[in-house]
Length: 135
View 1: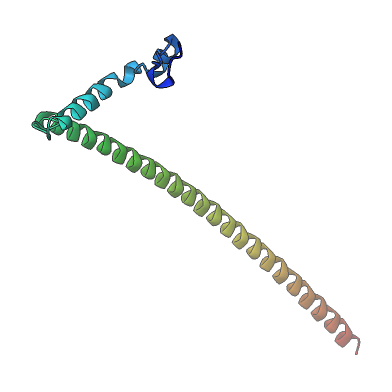
View 2: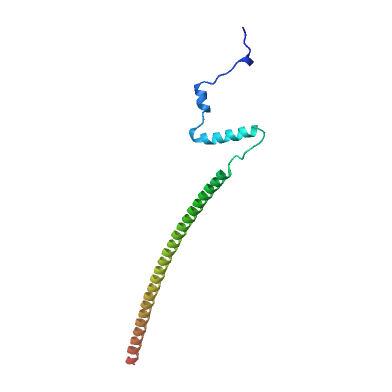
């Protein structure tokens, strides 16, 4: 006869079973969740989910990882700061060298100007002397 759809049972196949199979890396977490869910169904939690030892170990692990991260950040910032200070020192050295070079070129320029002025004065004096001597 005719079978009603409500009485039909759908059975999962092999490929369906692979979809719901727990990843081996997540097995422990799934067991913990299952334990928590089964305790909740028994009228509330009769025992803590994590024991004090487990909580303490978890807190220590978190603090240890946090300290490692803080140390890593501090080390990176120190090395970045040292690199910046090194660049600043190099720029300061370059600036000093440029200033020294500018000072030397200015001194040379002043010497040259002094020499030209001196020669002009000597020339004027010589021509003045010659013109006065003719009189």
